[in-house]
Image (tube, rainbow, N blue to C red; front, top):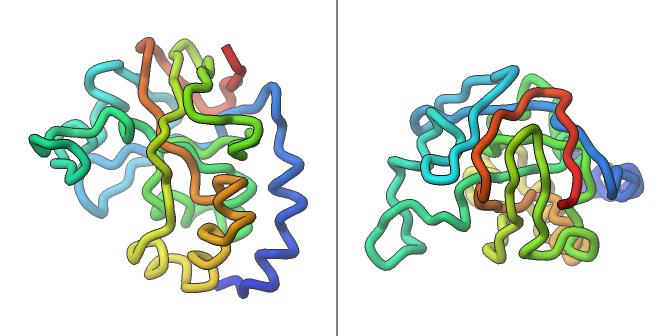
Length: 179
């Protein structure tokens, strides 16, 4: 596992991610707890999330009735950040659905920003996405310190939550563009 010093040395590479037009590097569906399926394409549905993903059936502690939280319908993580933490074959265990070569920093992608991704449209949520105990278990305590540091939070190194506004298909290699 990478040390905090090794991760800090990779911040400039993460900061150099495209700001105006990025691309999908990896798509992961989570059919059940701990299970991951790497896909070449997926359907994003404004009511069901990433079709076949457990988001729709997983109770949320962030909604009054325990229903799935639409603010956490989809998660995106910067591919450069996850690459700093792990080899590509380990990216899916991070738990995110879309790994993107795109600047996810708060300054360039504040909540409410809309993105065209494949044929779908998504909106970045206010709900922050942060490193947790599972993330620490999978990538180490230095990784969690890195993503939760002041710079890590500003760059959204742990990723961002989003909701799907317009259903559509996404494929590996598809463009991500601000709407």
